[in-house]
Image (cartoon, rainbow, N blue to C red; front, side):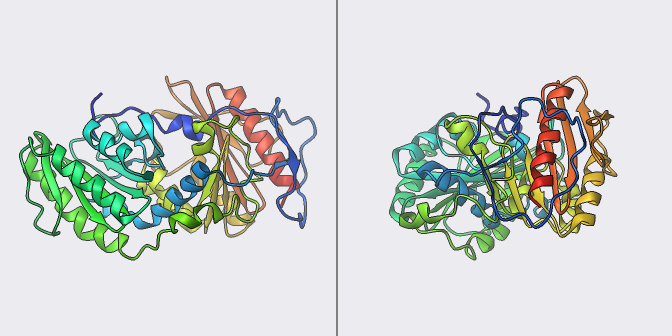
Length: 383
């Protein structure tokens, strides 16, 4: 597998947009009001009641911590304004282990991490193009159970790099960096329980080095202001926050995909996940402060007007991708609409209900329409 960050494999979409399962009903909080639900709205077999998330498992708690770690990552375009395109499609979301980890770092690094008490990673990746970038940068923050375990992993990675040509990162002491291949510099630094991985690619190794050097100048300041949750307290992280996850359609099952996919996080993670960072102001202007991800994505905004405007902006952004076209929204559902990524069998529908905005995707238009209709119904009944 090609382990440089120029890979265009879209591995995040499945974690964000997956199937649905049977549910247990419940209420996240006492609803202060309800909104009208159009008669005959087609919700398919999707649930229309809230679903209380189970208490955090070890894995789901670490996924929540991975979401918190997004606060400790800079936005890649701060390093170079050309680095705008990427997001979840290039693995910018938490990772626990196995093939997902191996898809983000070289094989030797994944093996070194697996031998120590690696817990969760959070990465952010962007370039100047999604499929064929000429410059690209990935910054990964990898959390271990303790400082000692992180040190062991860091030392093992350095040992694995000895056969490669060393590259000097002059901005930051202690960085171990090598030329992974011409044009790509792969590097590591240690900070408390974290191993930081920065991989930069340019037309030449010198340009890749420049990206990595600048990234460390900004990232080391950012991570040093972040307070990680102690490992012994990780299960104390709440399963839900303000009932937002209970309001969100769930990914079925209890496997790794469901564990990674059913979660909540703040604005920083969603800004790392969006495909084009130029659209960050859509979320900031709406006052988004909390997001839940499952079989749909739900955003808490400032108020109903903000949610409605955000919905409209996501449907028709000023920089609309020419490969995305507007298609029919669910019949009878006001202020909703859908888009299609042409040639990809990928549909996304959008709606708002009070202060909540939501999106849901599917392989067919009907699937996406039914999901968003069900998600609207849940939100309308639980304002």
